[in-house]
Image (cartoon, rainbow, N blue to C red; front, side, top):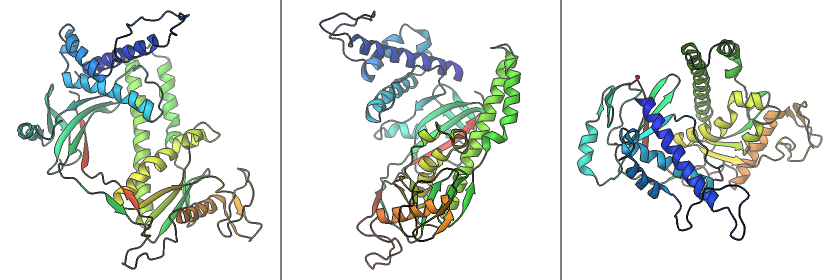
Length: 413
C-alpha cells in the first residue's frame, strides 16, 4: 500500500512539474519572431499553474482517474505543496530548478491544520496509542515507539518515510503556547574550532580529534556486495535483495556518522559557553583534493547543522567568523607569517617565535576573531549584574521549543 501511494505521488509531482515547465517554455518565444524549436503552445491569457490552480485541477482529475481517487486527497495536496515550496526556494534561496523524481521516499498525512478546530482535537487524541497510530487510510498501524508522546501537545502531521531498513513514521506535534524569544548571553569560557586536514577538528586548547573513517572501514564489504550485484540480472529477486543489502549498509554508515557527530557536539559543549568556528563553504571541500576525506567524516554536516543545533539546545553561544588567513596569522602577536604549504604542519612565527601545531594555531586565531567580533573580551563582566558576557552585543536567538518531533519505525504495512 505504501509503495502504491508513493508511486501515485510521484506521478502527480512529475505531471505538475511538467505543466509548470510547459507554461514557462511557452513564454520564452520572442514576440516578433518564431522559435527555432517546436514549443507547446499555451494561450496568452492562461495563468501560471500555481498551487491553487493545480489543486483545483487535481479535484477534477480524481473523478476520472481511479488511481488518484484511491489515494487520500490531502496526501496529494501535500505533494503539490512540496513542488510549490521547491519553486519558492528556487527564487528565495537560489536553488536549482526542480527536477523530475524517479522515486518518492515520503508522503505526509496532515492531521490537524487549523487551531480553531476544537471538535477534531478529541478525535486526534484517540488516534495515538501505545505502540500504534491510527492513520486516515491505513487504520491502526503497529509501530516501535522510540519515545513517549509529549504532553499538552497537539499532533500536527504524520510523515511516512521509506528507508532501506523499513518504514518510519515521523509524528510532528505543536503546542498552542507561544514561547518568547530567548536572549542568549555570552559566557566566560570560549572555544575555537578549526576544521583540519589531518584531524577532524582542532581546538584552541590543543586537542586534536582524529578524523573518523565510517565509509572506509566498511568499504571492503561494500565492494564485495557490488561485485555480486554486477553478476545478477537487473530486476530479479536476487538483484533486489542485494540492492536492499547495499542500501541498509549505506544507511548504517550514515546513522553511525550522525550519532558520532551528536556525541562530539555534546562533548564540546560540556566545558565551554561560547563556540567559534570558521565560515567555510564545505561544498568546495567536497570537490577538492580532500573530497573523499571530507565526505567520509561529514565535517560540513557537523559544522553547519548538528553543532549549531546542539549549541542552541544547551544554551551555548555559536558564531561563525571569517575564514581568510587563519593559517597565516599568528595567534600570539597577530602578525602575518605568510602562506604555508599543505605539507607544512607547524606554525612558527618569525616575529615573536611562537611555535605550535598548525591546526591548533588556526583554532586559536578563530577564537581571537570570535572574541573581537562580539565587541570585547568575553571573560569580562558586563553591567555588574552578575551575568557574564556583553550587554550591547547580545545575540537574539529564536526559541523553537514549541515544536517537537517523535520518530518511530513501523512494520511493513
